[in-house]
Amino acid sequence: VEKSGMIDTWLRKHSLIYTGATRHPFILGIRDGTVDLSAFKTWLGQDYLFVRAFIPFVASVLIKAWKESYNSSTDMEVILSGMASLNEEISWFRSETPKWGVQLSDIVPQKANQDYCRFLENLMSPDVEYTVAITALWAIEAVYQASFALCLEDGAKTPAELRQTCERWGNDGFRQYCNSLQQIANRHLQKASNDLLTKAEAALLRVLEHEVGFWNMSRGEA
Ligand code: HMH
Image (cartoon, protein in one colour):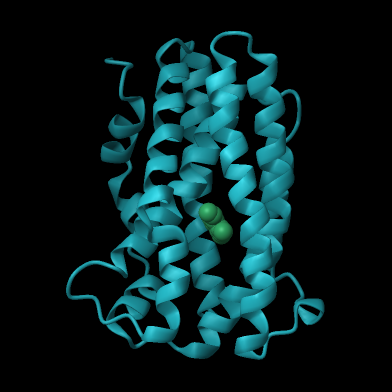
């Protein structure tokens, strides 16, 4: 098996679930302008809670990068830039939610969100290898990048009031950040044992399943 470009190999192998996560009916609804705004509000509130749990996960990946002596300073720079964006993202949620009549203090985490956050917490364990954690981090970010970029493509009928949300994850800087994470993940997967590759591939699949579950939940289907 050719180990370089492992991520692309896995995306081809698991294209059905990857497409399920990145072209979900919730996203297609934003793109064609038919999205149910109550679903959008559910997503917005739940995603705020998700991001709050996601930040400590990213911090745990940063710690793992630091513990890897090999080339870790460039990895750390990329991960740290992601953390800086998350700081700004939390402020965005705080200013965006009142516009939609969503009160942050009232949001109760739904089951799919809880399940996803518990999965993140398990990945924070020091027993989870850096290669597995960075693969999961890439996948989590890449699903949002691919999904929201779709809503900004030529011909998309994304409602004006949702464009800013789509630009948050669909913009070019975020695409480049995802590409950097993918390169880092590929570099570590390239030198990984078969056992580690199996774990990283499983983590990628779990992320894709949780992302589908999160979109389903937003549409009131979970
Ligand atoms: C559910 N997945 C979910 N929320 C997010 N904000 C991201 C990924 C991030 O990029």
